Image 1 (cartoon, helix red, strand yellow):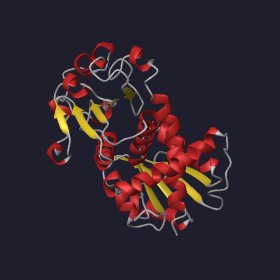
Image 2: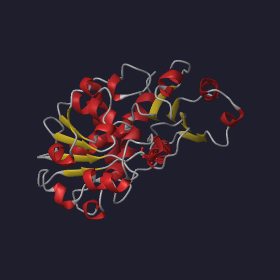
Image 3: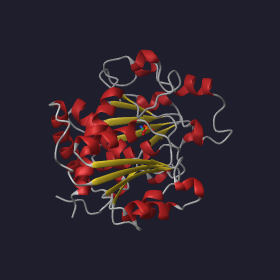
Length: 306
Ligand code: CP
């Protein structure tokens, strides 16, 4: 099977069948990693460049490791220290990488739609590694893989997504994907941190966390995005933590075996308290591990599309 697009720009663009196919390929990659197979020939002769205009630890490192584990030529570029600082445009930057013979460009950018823009101007496959407040598709894929591993399925799970939904590309990608795969998505956020297009997202939404997490199979807490907050959206961090942070008492409302997820990086004591993070069913480390397998699968599928 091939994806219908040369690029991976968002979960919105993928069919349920395409999502299942990527997850299946990620499961195969995970098996290789579990066998410590960290030098496979999958991408021999292929070139992968990561182009990051925003900070990242997990996404950037896992794309780099995934490329190297599959024997690709891997290179990294950040906006700081490049000709972006001399005023080179996004399209010119991407085209420069493209004509060097790059097969896959992985881009993170603060502007929603930046990956879609460069995808139209490059022969290389483009992977969205997070664009503004729009999407972060490989994060949703690794979240889905983790849910599938731990719960055995995605269909019919009740997934509560808690916190700063308005600014979260992780939430948006998960909402699109979970809806396509038959899960029930419930949001819990202060009114000021709910997305404006909530009525179009096919989810239930509550302005208190208790109602949202009741009987949930999965509680996904989001990072409070301090860098994207306009003043006035929140009274204070302390109040956010008091009313929306996940603590042991609140967690009792979810199912007894509910998974606790967070895309990272965690603001400890704000979205999640340490005692909850230390529970066995908090799978934040497993999410990070699965990120490598998912990115291996995505790079392998896209680099070999022709
Ligand atoms: N979850 C996530 O995208 O983390 P990074 O910003 O560290 O890549």
